[in-house]
Image 1 (cartoon, rainbow, N blue to C red):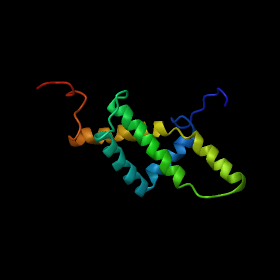
Image 2: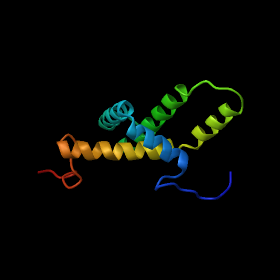
Image 3: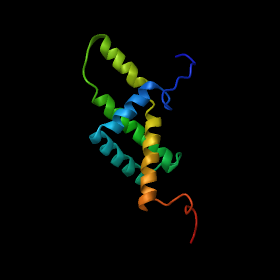
Length: 123
């Protein structure tokens, strides 16, 4: 792979932007992944190495990737190679980070997550 840094509409590349755009614009996908983001953020898997938010990002990214790979259409010839190449370029972690930030913002607004101003305070 070349050392060229290519970005697209604020995302790491076109493939990442396109997947996130589809996730946001398909109502069923949007609602499903919005809820999964909230669930994963509120109940991350325990880790001795990563913070809860890092674990949540890793887990959501992995789930997004697995779900999309499992649901990719079965096609042949050069088209399968092209689809696999495009999916391999998607920055799943970047998408997960964005979704978790949105989920956290919603949770703070609804009072289900402590705001940054009150975290760590013993009132």
